[in-house]
Image (cartoon, rainbow, N blue to C red):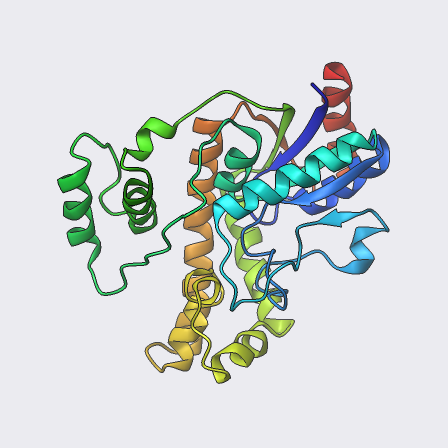
Length: 294
């Protein structure tokens, strides 16, 4: 099998920068694996790579949909595999980078998905009632009863496939992938996340979100995406601006924790501590590991 480099980790650890450096070194092309960065005009809140930062490296699956369009894990599986196969056919190295674990899992593993995927968000049902609803049809499932997103995913999966999502767990890789994870200690990560949110605000995040709010757009990426859903609450006068900003920071920190859990439980990731004082040290350390597997 041909090699694929996969770069994972929470926000702010340097995934984007590493992907470009590795693409230059290994004649690679970059594939987005962030569920929010597929959308056009969601730039500041998603920390999307800029044209200048791309350094003329080909990038795929960024800005491919607008926020009014539906896009499922099945769509990503289909699109990403097509891009991967195209890159490999041209004797180049696919480099997948992002923090959406299910995107990566569905793309690289033998992960069965139905094209007719339900997209029910159950907005009018409480999380507790959703959990009870799931147990009625999937009585043996083991799932966090407070994790609304996972419960909804499990419900929709059962409705589409008439079987438990727990039966769709697979560790069979379809590609020869090298999983690289960037990390840092928790205190430093949380400080980076907090400062990153402040920078987003300074760079115009509130104006970016207000643009969609003023158009009365309430689609899934805006109502579910961190940095967007919190500011919608501010615009609805449910919370103050300061409370919204603090909530973005809090939700970002919690998301980072869930990302670590998913990657550690689902993939064979080799973790590297990011050297923020000299990022070249990180690049060299990761490259040495990749070279040993090539």
